[in-house]
Length: 209
Image 1 (cartoon, rainbow, N blue to C red):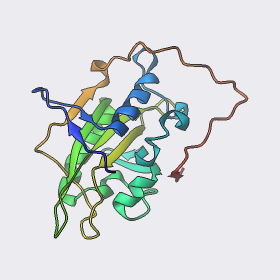
Image 2: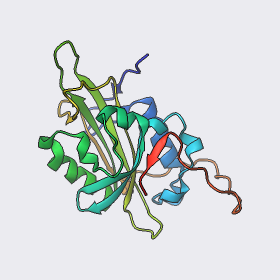
Image 3: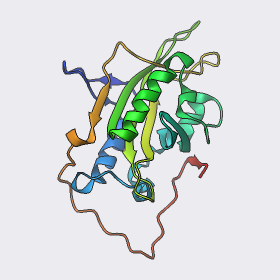
Image 4: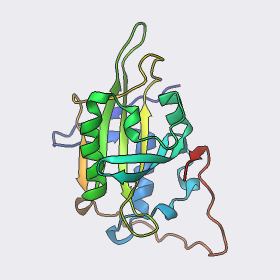
């Protein structure tokens, strides 16, 4: 059964794509933001986002507006129909939208900001148009630099074999929120992990670190 995408339009400049995977991943990212800080990549615990893992990715910034996939869930392989390891996230998008994607991707790192963009895949013969969303949330690396992004890409159906690239969907609102405007929710105090207990590796994903 395919989960339908619902987009909340509040009349503001931005809106939230309300998809269970995106909601789960954002809630988890938010829980790591102690004192409104930017979460650390090393703090990700895959057990806390198990249902979102197949759609989840971790990007590494390699140049302004360019970020490569270091971790990618199996659903991303299915969408692209090829192995996404080491590829730029722009590989999922049509060439005409890559420059716009680069601008928003750079904002995620440099603002830093949470970015959520609606996407679509063109309709084809005997195939309906595909709708979805991509979520980008900044994270720090081991040096403390904001050079990682935790995100997810979801669609409400598979892309056809002849239409493997997505387009940004201008007909639906985008969400751009600098972290200075997003305050960490007063959640429970996270349990401290014993230093002798190794963190589990991301499951159901491929890693090109």
